Length: 100
Image 1 (cartoon, rainbow, N blue to C red):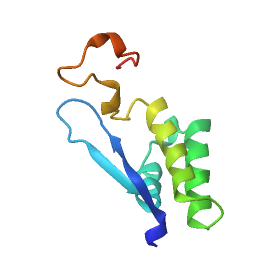
Image 2: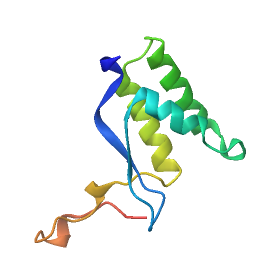
Image 3: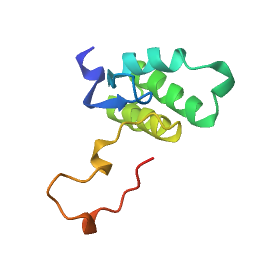
């Protein structure tokens, strides 16, 4: 099952006061998705779930499933994207990403 691990973990942030969670495999992404509230399950959720299921079945790579799960996390505003923040000491002129 080692091939189901992500190359880099997807960092989930539920907001201030909560620790950042790292989802680093297809199996962990599936657990996270299955706990998602049924009333908030839309097409992006379904896509992420289908991709993770396909990866578990060997029909898709773990990295393709990771991309779908990352998209879900981004859309639901749970993605902890540290790359959107400026590096200390760097000029702000080169920063184009918006932080939520």
